[in-house]
Image 1 (tube, rainbow, N blue to C red):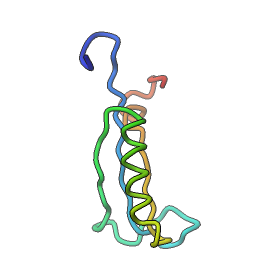
Image 2: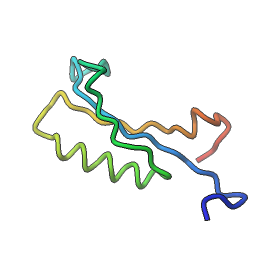
Image 3: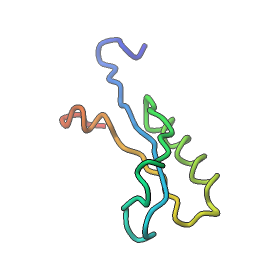
Image 4: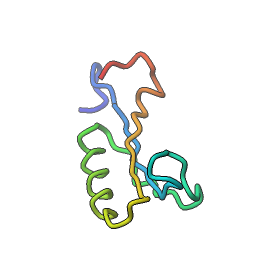
Length: 79
């Protein structure tokens, strides 16, 4: 069970959007960011990231990212 002692949630955020330049990480329009979701582990987040990245492969400016939220919430977390 995810809430039993010793089983930490390792939350991951998947989001993306169009970049101003394919060599950077500045988004063209912050109001149009695509928040895909928050996932309980890296494998689930990677599956969501991969699906979105493949669905937008025709747009070279579109990029999706995985943010390790658990590292932001608890910097001491080792995963």
